[in-house]
Image 1 (cartoon, rainbow, N blue to C red):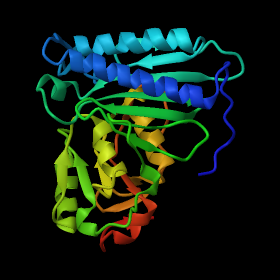
Image 2 (image 1 turned 30 degrees about the horizontal axis):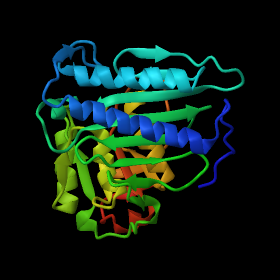
Image 3 (image 1 turned 90 degrees about the vertical axis):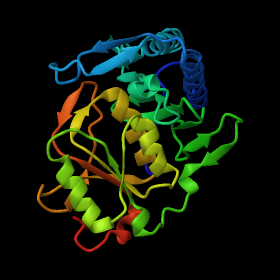
Image 4 (image 1 turned 120 degrees about the vertical axis):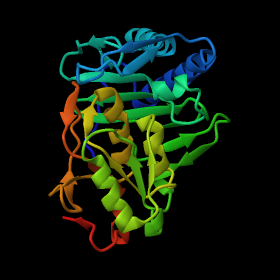
Length: 297
């Protein structure tokens, strides 16, 4: 993957930045795990500004406070965008640099004490480019991520065993391709039905988008379809960064009535916005496995 040279705009190199962000994710995992049996939860507005179906916990706010304090002290001048109402603009001269924070992704799964689907996520953006991203699985304590100026994405276990995800063979059978993201939005049931017709066995899942995408990065699933939804910088920044670093591509439908998709470049935004169409995400190596009737233009 060819990228422009990255210059870290403070007295820190890419290795130090990578180690710092990865360590922050590890500390957040520990903080969240410590609260599994003692957290308090509160309802909050959903992104549509109407319903009160979203929720946050003391684990969310404590993990975000940990991130904010450490980033402010170690990366002075960097902007910070966090899910729980945190917004600090970049004050560095000569570039736009900020960190996105999703302190606890999959909060409802965390409240249900699920053994999967809960994560914590960081994304580092410099001049519009996701130069580093780190996602920690709260239950397995695995960490996924990459440092600036390298194509290597690692899956690191709690025992410090590292696997390079960019070395995984992506050539898999078509019947193992698809994972659909659970949604209650109008029209998604039709998409699910059409995909079932083409592929037969199709899995539907939800909770943390970080651990959800990780199933594709690890090679468990060959492709994903993400329903139309509100996009947030703390969710999409790290998953787009890791996916693109691994060579995955994003597509949007050409016609909502047909399975015809065209290439799409995800927007790396500092603000929440509504995406009115689903996204198909797959690796270039699996395009040849798409069945007749499912077209990539």
